Image 1 (cartoon, rainbow over the protein chains, first blue to last red):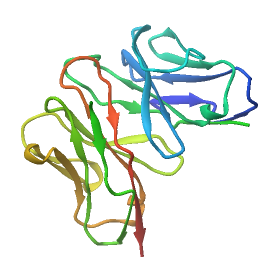
Image 2 (image 1 turned 120 degrees about the vertical axis):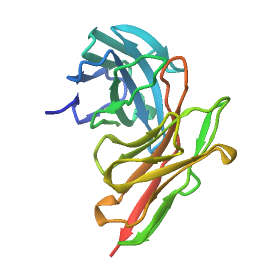
Image 3 (image 1 turned 30 degrees about the vertical axis):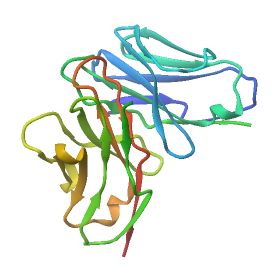
Image 4 (image 1 turned 60 degrees about the horizontal axis):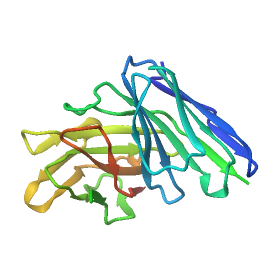
Length: 115
Length: 114
């Protein structure tokens, strides 16, 4: 049973296109995250949602729009894709939002390649 | 600013030899500390974490890490490396209070030679 799943696993697209990545967790967690891992393996948080509410929004272009239809899903929509958006995007989830920090469980990642 | 430094980009260890991966952090207060492992093409898996208490933390797969406040370090160790340990290892810090925003190091790639 996959705890945190992402689709698709690979995504190849042209510059200027709009694409979405989906994430689902079956752990019953309240908080979900999106991270971006660049070509040098540097991993940086982009967004965090708690119970469908945006909590953390790092300095991310507004072409990136997360959407949380319910607390088990957090999708990432990217408009007008650019070459620099090529990266691996990881979804993660955790139980606690603040205070007692909890383990974040990561999905397998989505490798996005923009041509 | 919060930061995590993993000074070794690559490390090669012979199978059966011991391993130590270094992690230093810069943080306003004592953060929560984590080590994650990423196998090729996989997501990140938590190896161990430190919140408080005993500064020597045991994790999965035979890994341990020691928190040294005076050195702002949280080095990962394993007494005997197996070929299956070859992966990318990430150290991360998180705030003791407030929103859970992990800051990751740049990772250390572990290669295991026969």
